[in-house]
Length: 257
Length: 138
View (cartoon, one colour):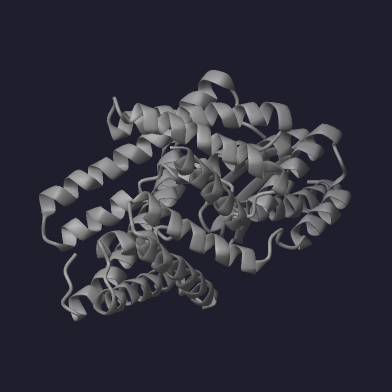
């Protein structure tokens, strides 16, 4: 193996793994991510194989006689579509213009340093509006809709607080559901709710893992068995934690749905 | 109906803010959502939930591919907020409630319905991608 080949591969593997990590953290689906990285490898004249799991990226690169395998854990996952859009444009640009790896690394760092496009106050309002809308769609009255607006805000703060805690991503679902359910029970005792089940559902609608379940089936359909099954189990676990959070206060206060 | 569609546009825009989608995409994604939900509402009068969801997801897929072709927007970005309005999260919640109420049969029915709806969304999107764009996007 020539030393030049080795350093060439190391530089490229570092860049490609960083890019894959950023794409995965921004919410890119596994099959699209693998496709993107494999095309980038072809554009760079490398033989590349990539394996994505929900919390990690493994990349194997070959160039002439040199060969390298690297693995990186991805701990911060989420859905940031603005970042995903920027990274997607960046991948297109690399393939189209064949920009050098050093320059590409600098551009990637710049993209990752960009701030979030919207302020947190707007996101709080959006959580509130989404819960209110679902209650409206389910036929709730004005006061039920107002309660849901409040529940949306509670869910936002609970999610934000508990998601930041270490190893507590599932706890946030339980606590949010618990708070929503408890508030609804209190509200029903003081005022009147037409259907407590529908109000609770509207309050926690943003937490329900419908999207996670759909994504897991999409990944399984693309033969991403490892990632798909992990996400499927994750969606079911989220559902269980939410359900437990909802039903615990109902049992404690003797309220039936 | 018009009020309903205005609400759908509004909620889709809120979902775009939550998932941090670029401002330049907001109007188009809102319109995709309004068109797909109009289709959903009209079809649901004649067909069951799974069939309606399948065709709605197919329509969302076509519109996302159109956007991909002319504006280079990744399909995932255009299709995610309108799809959220279709995903079976509420069915899953009802399923767990039914199981906890010790009604296993009802829970199983809802569970299968949830999985069928999720499969319908995935298949609708995949079919649109296969028919109108033979290769995956970069």
